[in-house]
Length: 433
Image (cartoon, rainbow, N blue to C red):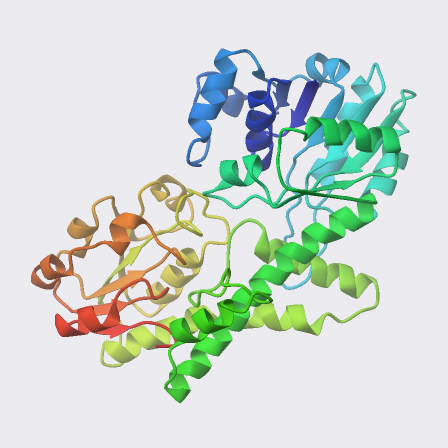
């Protein structure tokens, strides 16, 4: 099939690369000229394991092309995927900004020559497709159909999630549209759910707010475990054995971050308020998540005799999670800023996210080598979680004992063996342990 993807961001580029790998002819429209130049040279603008190679492979086959021209791409398209950002500026309860979505669909409508299916992959409020249809009719007389196929990608495992998803949700009312979208996804395994577009859009919000709620529950439980002498790792392991609960997203730590969870919770709270419903549960999730940073700052102060002023603290991991360079709503950024307010001197390590981190943080020393960063340091603090980069999980603590000035380890995601570190003479503090 001839496909067009609007937006060469995370979702758009992954979607385009995957569908082109199935033999479809895919054009990705991106208005950022510099990004287009880099992509044509084989440079992927963010880190995602395996994506650079997949893009290069299908670009060489001419199955994947990049352009900034709607006039070039849209008339040739059978299916057009809209993968633009829908940011929420007020993370305490605000509407998603749909301006990029309306701009993109206006440009699509103006350049339609033949009937096409427009698939909204961006995260949008339920009912958006009906409003978009009325909007687009102002700019074209050509027939089109709107559908919603939400993405459920996890950064760091996006290709695996795309090639082997748990489900494909198709939100559409037209039977011919449903048939064509099922055909497009034929080579992709996983369960199928056919529903209307509003339900599909709500499924995305529901999924992206339930998971951080689960994380927040684990964090709250961890704080209670600290007070009652239980071990959160044992508790969540026991919980996860129950197939009704499962083990995923029960890792206690600094809290959730990233490009989706914070904004989608905020959007859902805002949507609820507009509908006359006070979503107190989600508001509590937001508040509890923010409090986790200060919980770890207090832990650090306590282990440093009440003050971290002029203490050298090394934060391992800067992106919002390992396996990506994405710094959006990174918990490490919030943590570092709070530590700096208390007078701490920050050194930071990350294998891929340092260039992005430099745009957000000041007065930080950056290192690729954790051992160099930890020379003469007072505190080792785990940043990105919950699983961390392998090189940070497998540090040689015998070596660190010799080169660190202090012997304090703040294990924000419980990735280390606490008994082993204590035996070596480190002062260890995790969460809920």
